[in-house]
Structure formats: C-alpha cells, structure tokens
Image (cartoon, rainbow, N blue to C red; front, side, top):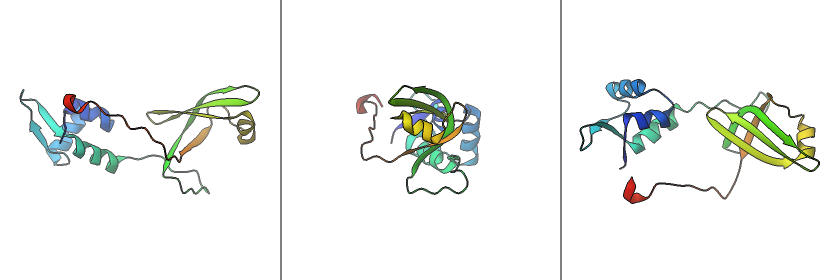
Length: 135
C-alpha cells in the first residue's frame, strides 16, 4: 500500500497536520515510520477516512436526484454570449466549470453569488495517478 507523510494526508483530508496526528493518537489512522524515520500513514486508510468524514451540503429543500455526483456551491463567474455560456461554481475546495446554452442561464436566472448544484452523470471520467515507480 502507498504511504504518505502526515502533511500530505492533511492536505487530502482538508485538516491540519496536528489534526492528523490527533487522529493517529486516537487510533482513527495507523502510523508507521518510513526509512528516514518520518511518521507515515497508509494512503488507503486516508482515503477511507476522507470518505467517512466527507460532508458535502445536501440538495436544497424539495429537490431529489438519482445522480450521486453532486456539488453544491456558489456561482463565482458567468460568461454569457448570444448562444453559449460558461458558469463557474466554487463547491467547497473544488472549482466546477459548466458550459451550457445562454438560454439555460436565462431560464435558471443564474447570477454571481447564487447557490447552485452541479450534477455530474457521466460514463467518461478521467482518473490520473503518479507513475507506479515514483509512488
């Protein structure tokens, strides 16, 4: 299993290094020492903790959806021309950009600062990973 330093785990978990150390002390994560004597945690364990502690905002009242990949956020930018529009949302730590028709932007009444939900339902998702030799 890949291992990562406490500071790397903190980045992926969205918490401080000290919080990760407290989680190790409480047994939420198990730490070992690498060849240099630094404290490291298992990458898979970090992923499972991230999943368990994920707290994405829910859909607004009265809305239901079959899609599982929803990101609730705030519209940070709109670029609208006569036919197409680009809508940018800040969804927690993630920036989501959507291209849609200008008509859809007008129909939805989208404006900067509004709450919106980006729903992704796709059969084509790109996953990238470091070279196995460098992990």
